[in-house]
Length: 118
Length: 111
Image (cartoon, rainbow over all chains, first blue to last red; front, side, top):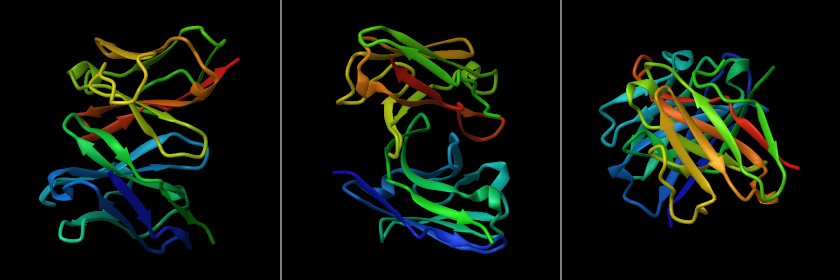
């Protein structure tokens, strides 16, 4: 059974940092692109970042470029999102998703809440 | 403002058929990129409903169907059931943004 479990969310002050993790199981993690998608409270879904199977290609939405870094450790079956210089508008539930050819997520984690507030 | 445009809400009575539209542009849907649909029940993660414009993952009832034409796509739900009440999102890829884009979401109310 495919499982994606996010962790690392919490309350952080503006300008602070957080590192999110996504533990994958039930599939060959190293064979798939992975993504982070977020959802602000009461709002819609927003794609944040993608990473290729071997980590050699990474793409970001403009609003997080230079502040967020997506990475992965295939030996640990884990996906990460390092978030620096956090802003109030980064407050959201962050989901990791397994991506399929055609740029869609076929499995999603349950999400982890990040709250940026003083 | 979302790159893909969906109606904020739709509604229908049990047993009826509803459609949800998703309008894009020449850099996403109109460029030939596939459209995918997700269902999000309250308080839960999104669930893949339709992929590749019209394909249903295993376990998704055939009451759900998708189509695409030009710069737009549609999700149709027939035989509405109370359990279909949820938020629905379309998604595609945008070449000018080099990333995925979502619609703003449509809240389906079953009357």
